[in-house]
Length: 338
View 1: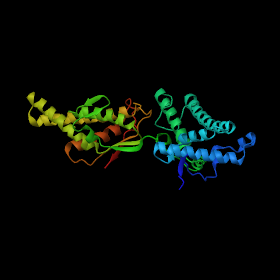
View 2: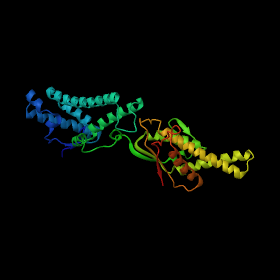
View 3: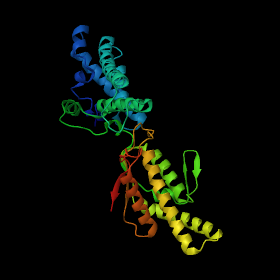
View 4: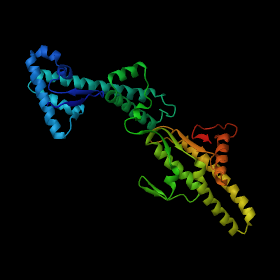
C-alpha cells in the first residue's frame, strides 16, 4: 500500500499526495519550462517518482506524513536536481511570491510612516510608539493573509465581501479578557522581575490595579474588563478605614467623630483613586501602542465600602477632567453598572 502525504501550501490549503498524483506539473509549475528545456513526459514521471521518494525519506525522518511548505519544497528541489531549467522556474516562482509579500510590507510601512493611520481610533499614529506598533500590525496582517487564508478568502477580503477584525493580532494572542483582579492582588504576585506585596491601603490598591491592567492589556487584543471593582476595592478600603480610625483615636478624637472623619477621608481617597485610573487609562499608551479599551463594572456590592466605590466612580465620571469650565468626560474605563 502506497503512502499518502498531506502537503500544506502557503495559503493554508491542504494537498493530498501519493506516487500516482497527476498534478505534479501544477505543483512545481513546469509546463513552461518543459517547452523551453525539451523535457518529455518520461522526465516528468521521473521527477514525480523522485519527489515521492524524497517525501517517504522525510516522513521516516520526522515520523509524520504532514509537511509544511518549506519542508516539501526542499524535496522538490532535490527531485529537480537533474533538471536545472525547471528548477530555475520553480525557484523564480517562489522568489516572486516572497518579493510580492515584501513589496506589500514596504508599501504599508511607507504609508504609515508618512501618511499616518486612522483605522484605529484608539491609536495616535503621530506618536513613535504607536507608529511602530501600527507597522508591526500591518506586517502581521499581511503575514496572516498570505499564509493563513485561502486564495478565495483573500479575494473576498480584498473585494470587501468579508472582514476579519483585528487580523494583525489573531496569530499569537487572545481576543478580550475578563481579568480576575481580586485573585491577582490576593496575597501578592510577581510581575516582570518584581514581587508586589498585596496592597495595604486603598490608594495602593488603585495604583497596583492601574499597573497590572496596563501590563495585562498589552498581552491581548480587544477589550479588557475588571469586573466588580467595587467588591475588589472594599477589602482595601476597610484597611484604610481601620488605619484612619486608629490614627484619629490616638490623637484623642472620640470614636463617633473619628468614624465621620475616617469616612470622609475614605470618600476622598476613592475619588482620587478613580480620577487617577481615568487619567492613566486615557493618557498612557499601552505597550501594544494604543489607549487600551478597559471596562470596569460595579454595583453588586452591598457593604458600605462597595457602595462608596460605586458612588465615587459615578461622581468622578460625571465631573470629568480638565480646567474649570472646560471639563469633559473621558473615554476609558467604560463603566458598567449592575
